[in-house]
Image (cartoon, rainbow, N blue to C red; front, top):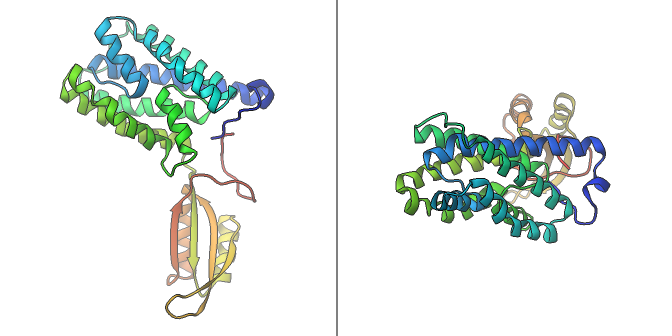
Length: 293
């Protein structure tokens, strides 16, 4: 997910991509509104970050949740504008506005369940998908997400993990306001949500790096190219114990292709060494996957 500081939304994006971004931020923010008003808030399960603070403030003052959602996010919109760019700030403003209006419109609607566990599970799933869509398409719905996006650029942690770390402190405040059982339900909801955030941002085609050491490297490499359609690179290696020269096959695949690649390796050279790792991002070369820019 890339943020651009120099150009505006209209200069950077063609009309088709701009409309797509608007549509998915609208959907994501609407899903968050549903998660809040239909599942979490009626069961006194708080959200995290600025949204969580807004839920507590709304409960204590009796004022509408949407008012706090909008006003408390304004300082972070300014940070987002200065540190990440105009495109991000405008996208975030749009998402926060939709979320604030959505919670106001849905407030009179009764919750779907009185079971706090069901509310935490389904609220967390819907929340994570909604937040993930907004983040994936260039915006944010919460000040902590803006901080997470900034830290994500310079840390090994995912956006979802950073949000979770921050919210561990914020969600604990639910224990003093709604009771400690609700605080624990809130943690359950957020564990589910941050997993769904990562899944939504990365998609099912998350990239993976593959390293294979095989005496039949040429035959195995040709099989990967022919049957999987992925390019391979042959690297020179040396055994640390034997000192023998080794050929290492390196390639990038998607998550959905992992099982097929393992099958190919098993058929061609079951004695080969295989290592598969997750990759956060892939750029350049001939690698193609569904990416959001």
